[in-house]
Image 1: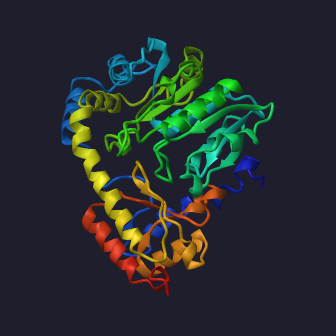
Image 2: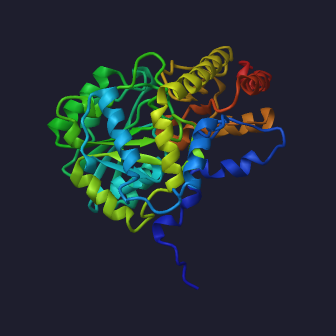
Image 3: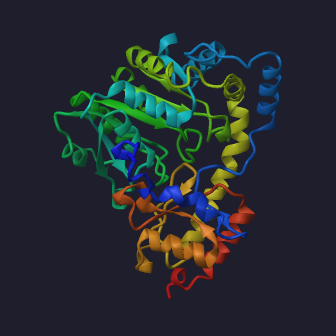
Length: 387
């Protein structure tokens, strides 16, 4: 019998992240610090208002561009927070951030077009580029540079087929927030080389030292930036599966055209939840952000007390990215040892690209009591005590 899979999917199980759920069920007392799905419940006010809207009839297809009220609120958000004026056809509501990235790559790439991706990177990017017919090109970042992209290094990876580059700040997995000089260098690089910047703006509330700076606000960048937003992390709404795209109108129209044949419109109740969350963003951020800031600070303190780990400062996000060099183990080996001996599940840095080898990603997605237990177990491991 023929193998009916496309050839490019015959190796789909190579990604270490694909085994997470299998491993999570290995021990009854597992503490899962792997996936970026926070333990906090979506704020009750959002649930109640979305439920009421569903009861009032918001259960049908919406405008395929997105619920008009939600798009108006997104435009108001950009105007109030960043001083950016958006047209009606520069905003598209998507079924979550991952679908948004897929749609963008389908919209912008012709076969063989290359996309620069800073490594370490969220592992889905490479697949999303390939789905669009493109070729991912990985530009390594270094801990010695504070995980900030080096645009002189990026220039070495340019070819006549380079069409776009992807940025993600605060970064998954490293936790670094790109500095203004870094973003200005990215903008100069994009303008000089006539590139599109795809900004995966997923953790924008979680900048702990300086406010988030969208690259599209820099001179000459609005017309060459696609910003992808999600309500999953900022409002702990992962299961609602709703996000949005801000893009120049020709790209937004192409995205909408593709999405018509994929899902047509994002779920109406989820869009209503997003509308209510965005309207209450300051109130909700005051509830959510300090919790994750405290978790990140506590996790960093615990990591620095373990001789088997090293750690550079993380300025944002919800992930810590410690090095395991002192253990002499690979990322995968260290993860397996931590799972077997401490019953704590974390991800190998190698799941996030070649530059991630030698590191682990620890998601601060459980409360301080569980984090204390997890690091307490790890502290008993000889490999992390320097023995």
